[in-house]
Length: 174
Length: 290
Image (cartoon, rainbow over all chains, first blue to last red; front, side, top):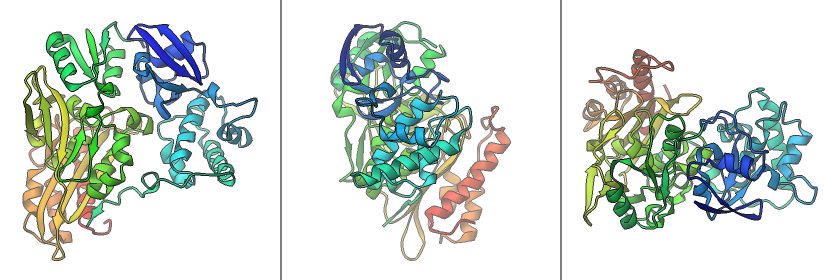
């Protein structure tokens, strides 16, 4: 089938089998190997990319489902040699050990801050529960996200969305 | 992991989807968010000749939370429900359940209708629709929609009241009256599925007398169920500590053959359902955690 998709602001067209997974399309057809294949079972989040602006696990999306969509991978964050604020946060806080989970972590964490620009530590940990670090280097990952939040806050940050900041379990209705 | 080959079609309307489903027969599988179906195909636990992608049908994604009942298109994503301020105001149980499914990436793809139609015995949505006595609307080859009470929908292990050729198109939820709601679950830590999950709706006024109780349980039996004994023990009664504790003991009443796997034995699941059932009841009744 014909697939037309924009990846990191570049338009692509390819003939693909319907069963081709988005992660394999990105890695094997486009050569964008920053998106990693980890568990392949929708658990680890190493294959996280942004699909029309929201993070998804590319091992559990068919490439053809992205027809007409905009995809952003880790390779799309750096602009003119300058790292994105979250990448810079991971750099400055040593938010990685082996680095395998890092692309997914960074993309999921960016989305977390887009929805909740000033998260608490617990909200960062909860918000990244779709991404596993086999090195268990979570402390520095959390530090990196909080650092990036602070830096982003120093520049212009959008107002927090009520949905993203509401306390869980506030289930009473009048 | 790579799925076996299949054909793919992406209808733009419900009518086109129904026509394709009728024409394709057994081998044609509807693809909603794909967060269960794609893993099934990859692990080759199941197969499809053709996938019918419901993700490009705008009318299936709508959420209308301003009226009564609330109306959710079957392809509304968990994240869209989680993020809707209108849903949070009208039916906080739906917001709470949506926000506790899997993780954010899964919630961005997975859909309400996909979860219900897949009918995993440990999924979260079934507990909510059972507690709220929601109505599930299906469309078949004819033009007429069929309404199925949530409590008639789950027929067995991953088996529902949907007939071949039918699509779940809409979920209607009556706006709960004054009172409180809660969803309490123990997550399987990798997948986020419920090892035991209990959704509670309690309607009561200033006198704390329970006008209506709805309790849905997931993760425990071969299918999600409404805990009728708990509802009966609460309706018409004052919601005090002793009444809630006595009612919570009935959460697993009638469960003969609980689910049991490497994550939790049947006995442990029954225990968790009772404990978390009581926590959910207390929270919905506005009592402090025990």
